[in-house]
Image (cartoon, rainbow, N blue to C red; front, top):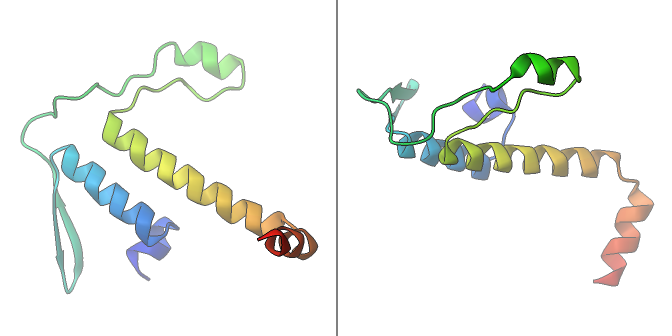
Length: 104
């Protein structure tokens, strides 16, 4: 299996993920045996990951409000958009797709 298969993401989202890791200070090397990631020696100058009042969010059946560093937010948004598109095109009927395609 490839990294794309294991993560269940596309090329564009993987590239955003790699860029996000690099922005956070990680070193990425690719070789015949796959990818190697080296963590930064010091923490990046970005916002820490925090989960304020997670107990309250849990009681309201909501995911905790987690503040992620900007590079991780970019990757998360790209991943969510890709999953939305995948789900949309899986669930939408062929007739709907044909009707939309005829407008263009």
